[in-house]
Length: 76
Image 1 (cartoon, helix red, strand yellow):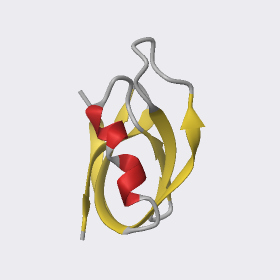
Image 2 (tube, rainbow, N blue to C red):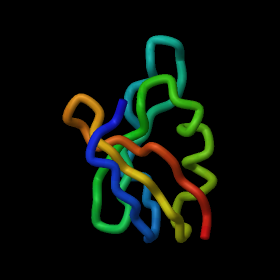
Image 3 (tube, one colour):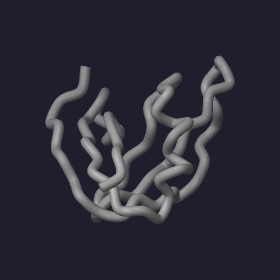
C-alpha cells in the first residue's frame, strides 16, 4: 500500500533500467515533472513505461517502503 500519493503532469523520462525482478519483469528509474521515482517490483505498469518516454503524461506517485514509486501513468 502506497502512502503520500500525489498527481503530477509533465514529461516522463526514463533515467535508466534497474535490475529485473526475480521473476524477470523489467524495472525503471524515472523522472516525471521534477520528481524521481521507480516502477515497483513485478508491476505490469513497467511494460508500458517505454511507450510514454519523452511524452506528456499524468502520473501518480506514492511512497512504498519509503521509496517514491510510480502508481499509474496515462498520456494527456
